[in-house]
Length: 164
Image (cartoon, rainbow, N blue to C red; front, top):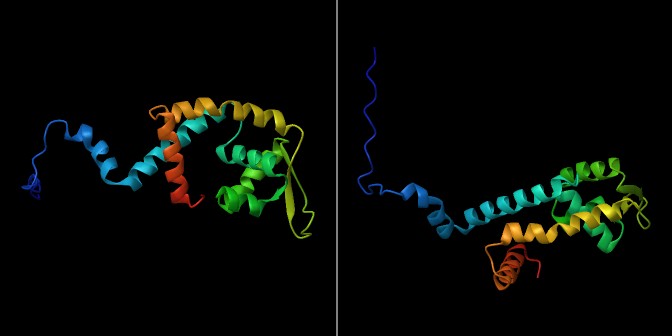
């Protein structure tokens, strides 16, 4: 029979205070912007998923429809690069949109080796409905910020992403 290991002693440098655990994440987020950004991104992604779930779209699919509507037909590679969506994810995204009848792949007009992804007439109403939910999404995800703070956040995140 082996003896149980001795209990682990508390750190001599720090005695836990009541409520330390409750405030841990707040303190950590203030010290570590990387962790704060990851958690904030997860919160925004969750809010976006909730907003789009009733529309049968993923976030990536919404972005693809929006870009195609705004700039016209694009190759999958262009969509992947511009929207910063991994190429392997982009294939599934386009497949899903094509299966839903929202896009089609056609020969690229200037590159015979590539295909251009093009919106179908059915994409317009779906995109309009998804875009109609954006104000609710922004209010849900960024409701704690004033309009000026939202603009500042947008500018700062743009600097991080180098999209100025």
